[in-house]
Length: 266
Image 1 (tube, rainbow, N blue to C red):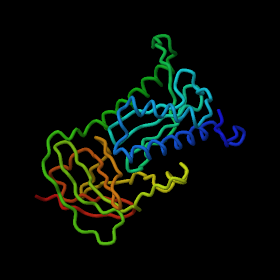
Image 2: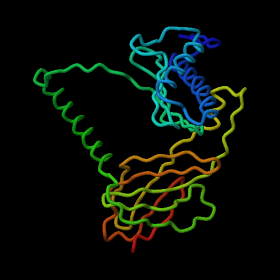
Image 3: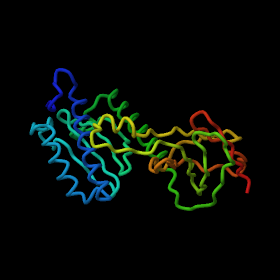
Image 4: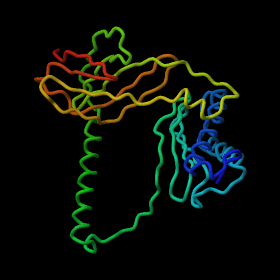
């Protein structure tokens, strides 16, 4: 599949699919901003399919089991897009109404085949059990913080000149959220701006947050989080576990090479 103006010999199929996705996303974004949201799921899916067919010149989908480009409505101001570039593979992005683009990457779709573990060799069974244990351990870490019982908020001290100032820590019984803010340039939307130019200017990357305390507790991301939004100022919130132990007196939070200490004493 080659888009008009993009020869298949000059661009990999994944890159071609990414360009198609960005072109459709830019058109959807422009119309959504005029309307105030992305519309309902059936509406945005039909609109995306029409645009993909138009922009690809009516080319068939590289994956015969999937549409050329699929869109899911996450919420009225947020959608996810997936453009197929070969059978069982697609490039993906999520898009917010303010133009923030995130969670981009390539995914593979697999067909599950049930195999009796007893038919595997001893080496394969051991490898399967190891990978299952690793997956289960990672899943348990991600799900450890549930934010079901709020305890208190701890405000951060002022951080003059910080590029990513920490606002506060929200303590829960089984973990905590780190709240921070950061500046960004206001979004612009020009009719003659192509997809690559627009998203190169306005995509945001996740800020890496690291947490330590004064007694050596190991903290890890858990419970999810989010970032983006705003006109000149954006906000992020990320969950961590475990909750600080009762004898921890300080939390040291680092972001973009800057560190601030929060006093945990009531």
